[in-house]
Structures are given as C-alpha cells and as structure tokens.
Length: 136
Image (cartoon, rainbow, N blue to C red):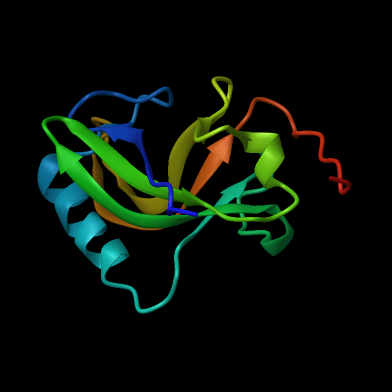
C-alpha cells in the first residue's frame, strides 16, 4: 500500500490567532527549522484542550515536516495504524471537526507578538475527546 501524506493548515503568520497571539515570519521560520531538524520522529497526537502533553496512547500520525507557504504554516501528515486512527482520520484526510495546531512556547510581548518561539509538537483538536473502538 502506498504511503498517504496529507497537507494541513496549522497556523497563520502575522495574523492574530484565536488567542490574539501574532507569530512573525522570522520567528516562525526559525521555529520551523528547529522543529524539522530534530533527529527523532515527530508524532501527531489527538488531545483535548486541558492535556497539552504528548500522550503516546493518542498517536494518530507522523508529522513529516512543517513548512511555510505565503502567510500560512502547513504540515505534511502521515496516518499511523493505531487504535486512535479511526477517531481522527476519515479515508485519507482528517475528519472535518478535527483541527491541527501546534503547541509551543515563547515570550509574548505587550502587542501580543510572540518572540523566541519554540514548537514543541503538533496535535489535532477535535472539540471533545474522540470515542475509540479497540475492535476492528
């Protein structure tokens, strides 16, 4: 079977996000370069808003890479064959109610611009915890 890779929007550059934070291009370029140069796989996980740590039982894919096109940050994602896969993936794409995002850290300036950005991991937020069937 051929490997499936899906391109998804993760963030916007220079535009306030839902929390009002603004990620400048230079900060995002540096954070993405650091993220992509890690020497271990970057897992895509499904998590709720209150649990921001990577939970290995919630792995649903691999983040192949992050990259910038225009004012947008995209991720190339590959599904993994795990129990949580069916909760997030619909055929060869993410479910419509599942939104990818990155979890990171940085210094927020008074104008809500983020400096010294570090992207820790990418996850998928589905609004509420997906129900998982452990049976085929």
